[in-house]
View: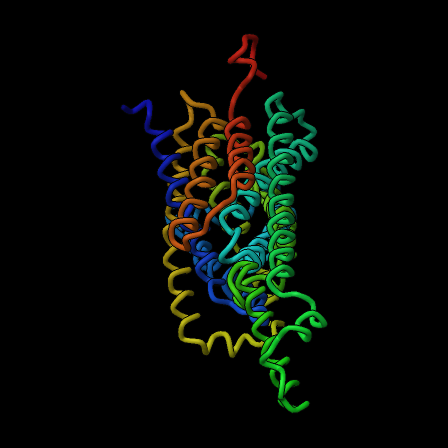
Length: 388
């Protein structure tokens, strides 16, 4: 049973970590086109601030002596600027990812979540390989192809859905010159009454189009917003890829007696750095006061905080799982964690917000999930030969 402990911890960490995805999605639920950006900024700021509390427990366990010894170490302290830069870029990814949730709310947010995590897995491997001049393992190339396939399918399905809805809209609402020929309710009206009637019909037509595009005025500005949400998710995942680089830079080459202290201090600096971009966006956003005065939004933020605390605890379990690494490789532990996190995060969104994925979107999601699993496999061990 003790042998399986790292995998159980990784599975539990991924399960709890997935509540972070739900927390960000809760924060942008019900946002109008005008309030999407500001609510996304406030949501990711609150979420990041909540999860940044988790490293404080590690620092408390480390103690003042370990803290000062680490900061006075010239090797580690020289790496702090790079850790901060990686944290800031990752924080930008968090903001973009939350905006993508706001754009896709009520329609494709579960798929957007999986695209973000797939791009994160791929880009973190590429960025680390470039920085440390490493050669990706064989399975990484298979994972890259599957993730790109998933992204292309997601974009295609979003475009097709928007096109189909627009065609349906044009069939149900003929051109104006045709309406004038057969609409009896306009006959006998004065010019002023006819204009009022046309204005009312145009408003109803617009509302109907928004209903078919996802969630009325509470979704993206148009059906094209679905493709924009997938594009933002790709950018978000790419920015998140700098997070593992920053954390690896902070602990790379540490001795056994330094590893715990360097890891705790690196994680603390990194998490604080991720707050910078969301905070800057909140301070410069118009309408933040009005958003915070909305009682329903404040209640959703409470849900975001609770999910952030649960997610932070999941992160602690995942860290402890890596500390138990031995019989199982770190790649396998990471695969279990990321796989459960990706799938369960999407499942939570689908269940809580009753979203449905099309067949093509399901294939896209499965492609991304399979890619994450493949990243953790060691083909040389499976098919023979020595591992690097």
